Length: 634
Image (cartoon, rainbow, N blue to C red; front, side, top):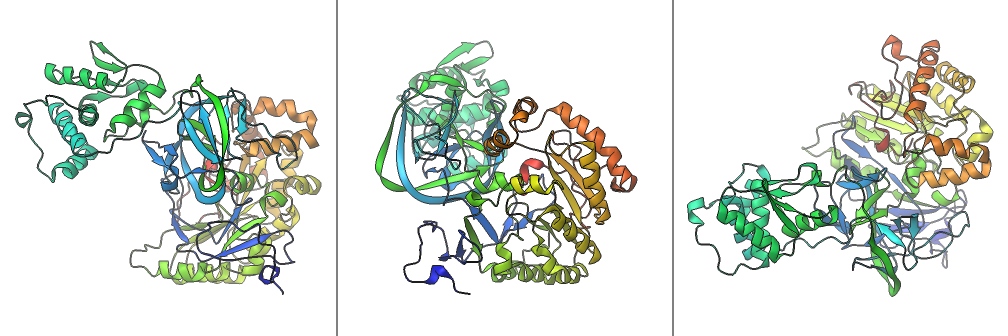
């Protein structure tokens, strides 16, 4: 086979700029209009942050990307973390907890992906002085919905909404820079935390050890107050006092002290830093809304996390965040972006849309169309790197999951054949593993998987949403047909392997009639599936816009129904979920898919009833709730 990308003068315009470890970018006639970016990865065994999933590690030999990243911000843009602090977007890591939004309130979510690219940069300036530098495709939330930084056309050729002068963005506005924590700050912190009562919080004690080398001053050592304390001393003092005697309950920031000198010093420090405050019976309280409270926390930098001052709070809408100007910098800059569970994050106080491209569309079984399969990153050295990581003395042979983020049996696997080596490496090391796929390429490796299952525990899951071939072709272009996936389930079971099926997503008014569900579950049972979980359609930001366009084009008569069913956010209406669960239960029992008489494994997001279907996890892994937000393949 001749690789066009290796020819002199080959078209390399779609190569991903700045991609770490890039070996080459190539095309092949077998995959029209797809560019494969072959990279040498440093690691393929990735730790999963957080404890909500039944596995702690993943392996992803492939990574999809759209046009080298659609959105993006400069690396120094501060992002609001779940602990209330900020971190430059360039320094974020996968799994890190940040704030996103759901139904107009701040909620904690996690970073699912993080990357960089090089694109022309634009500076957005707001009325309160907030500035962000981003790519022209980036989107911010306004009081009229999501808008791009610059004009242009979307993938469906519609004119996209963009920022104009006077457009009102949503959020708190610019974040205060954190303190430098120099000598004056450290001295002030010691005064505040010691005179405030020296709490036993581990973060406070760790900071004290760092600042003092282990010798913490006693209260009687801190008697002579500084004559002319500066701003840095004042920041440190307030941070120490807030760690010792501060409260952020209900979002209100209050400090108290029975020591009159300490209390007076706190009031003077707040005045010196121009922080609005009021003296009350319970202490001194920081005035203002969430923007002012965040400014205080970021300005002083306490050691104890204060994410509870943000979580659950309403996202502010204020005229202070009106657009003053959008100007081109005339140069290309290195820009960064992330994907989160909520589809957004908070960048320098502004609600910012993340790059949803691959993740949210594969999550709905809606990817593999031209716009979302045109560039695929291939970790060509995945097998060798994985073998090295599995040989480490620190490896504890924990459950490794594949396919929860990117399908390991996508069409590219037919070309690169990385999975056989990965399966052998895991089995030879005694590591249990699971695979979630909608790709029939897996059938090639069934003998190898059966052999692996003789030495380690193996789980296999297949995603299958519907039987209607015409509807499937419109919703899942480029994916194997429903019949092909049913045949895959049958072949997996014939090979003596378990196979759980994810009926996801069930589409209200389209694939959820009793007849449709009965036929689908009958077919799955006939194929021999060991278990089933049923999940209704989940419409997070990004996927919501894609599906809305499809619905208006193909079934405009249902647009009103969907507006009502998804009026409250990404999850379908709770009443619909309950009705679906009530109808699914008897059907599962009818076809022998009700977990052999145990509690029906029905996925009803938000009702805590969804479990991973039997057979989709290694037998050594206990049954676990299925957190739909955290899976991008379904």
